[in-house]
Length: 97
Image (spheres, rainbow, N blue to C red):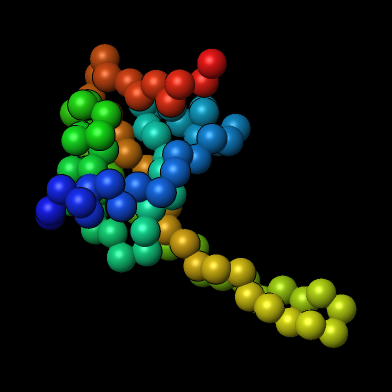
């Protein structure tokens, strides 16, 4: 993977109740990633950007739902989520403060 793609793979961290519980319980962090990202690319991107050791990556595909607004019909975008498990003693600080 080239250096430029490492910066494009991760779109945003997912900060929610569930992801916060996963951080505390299993040292897993959730990220929104590009749709064609592979697990190895996600692992390399997180290790390079945050200087941490990644143990495993789990990915989930979310398909866009059909939505209606009165007579108009549309569709939400499909997206991909990745759960990244870090080694013991490692953490990521997103700069909340």
